[in-house]
Image (cartoon, rainbow, N blue to C red; front, side, top):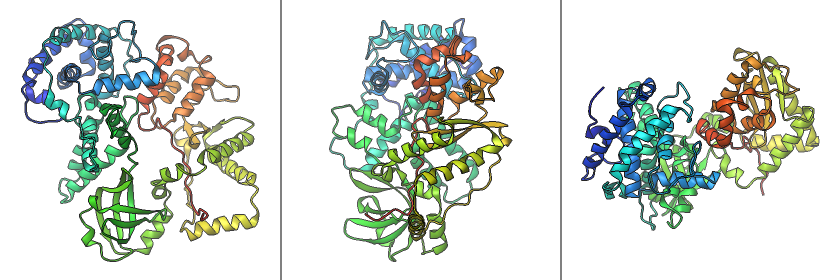
Amino acid sequence: MQKRIYIKDWLELKPYEKQTVTDSYYLKVCNDVKRAITINKQSFVLQMYLDKKEIDILACFLTSYLEDIISETNIWNSFISTHQRLYKKQLPFYILDEYYEEEINPQDISFLIWYFLNTVQEEKFIAPFNDFIIETAEKVMDVLDKAWEHAPENEYLKSFYQIDESEDDYYIARNLIDTILFRTYLFYPDTLLKIREQELKIIEDRKDDENIMMFLSENRDSTLHKTHTRLLSLRGKEWASEILGNNHRLKKDFLRISPRIMGFFLYKGQDDNNIFIEHIASGKKFNLTKKSFDHSDALKEVDTILFMGIVQWKEEWWFSGVFFQQPFNPDLILDEKNSLESRMAVNFLDHQKKETDETLKMQLSAFKDFNNGSQIAFLPSERIEEFFKGYIEFFNDTLNLSEKEIKEAKLRAKNDGFFGTNDEHKDYSEVSETGLAFFNPNSGSEIALAVNSAFPLSTNPYFYEEDSEEHTMRLLMDENLSTELTMYCIDNCKTKLPFFNKGVGKKYLEDIDFLLRFWKKDNYHTIPSITYTGQEEK
């Protein structure tokens, strides 16, 4: 194993490239931390999960935690305060009888080791209660405790996490989010490594493409807006708001940054301040501020097709991502208007003002009536598609629409350019012989496969105890299985499942929401799957 950690390794976790006056001090601490985690009786366990490079980065990561507290950059303390607000305690898993906020704590170090191990590698989930984590944290705490009194503040580092309270430029705000997600030690094992992996793949796949920088830029912008961190399943804008603090005037503005709409638009004209565009799939109209767009002079003909991304910041729509234009194309417009995926890009605008909750309540009630009073059904996989077709027909019948109302609704959709979708038959039995149909009250209908043995219910003929632990862990950890389905299992089955009645599974229940945010980071927050078409004019 390499004996020393060098400055380039330390700077890998920093938002700047050149060494500052304080970096030499922390590099020395880094090497002391490395010795603490590699020269003890538990070090061989750590080396089962991490290679030499990763151990060096872990030492830099833990030392960066000390630097963060000393320099008051508010990265770690933002996590602590948010966890406290959500769960009425500073940290999951560990005993907190002696815990000192805004100071270093052995519980923090234990947690950081656990988080690093389970984020850098995903092949094996390592429980937070392992002795080697606790003992390694104690050794590291001894090193950091000795450094505490003399550790210098890194004022330069702190400057990267600040923004002027009067700032109106979206791109400066976006840069702060970029710094937090992709250039900050706390998210190094998570979003930073992920973006690096994506970028290396793009470079490898498109190394001969003259537009490679455009693909890299688009990927970074897309990831910045949609990704959630494993810690608390928060987006970059939410971390920025938290780090700035309650007294910062931009705190709420960061929280209000809209999801990015990426897609095809029609150019409809411009004035001195705005470019007028129309989202092709949905027909929604937007005013794009010229402050964000340098290509307005190139827009000449009305109904030219633009491919671009837009984001709302401080009540204005800003260009964000890549841009290109092409002549009017009726075939592309027809395809877009019949693409549910393209329509769904603006769903969040409808969900803010439509009676979405009421619609979901009606659908849930119909689902239960159709399914003998239950919101879950266990079926042979080959019957799942038939089940949902029957339910949809049943729900439509409950609306009691007259033939005239049905014709008018279809006509509105047709006038809107939507002719319906042709879903292909899906053979779920290729994945599993049995599955389940579930109505998620926060989104709508769901299908789950290979998890039936996580549900020891009288209505489930496909429960097999020998598979229950495997299916339960899959339900907990698979990001594609919803939080609501998982909680339905826990709320209705935990007393009957061996996994939750003994050992580590029982301990997981104490911090189950935190763990679900960790495991299901990008899909923890369920959004409605309702897409509006053929809306009546108000």
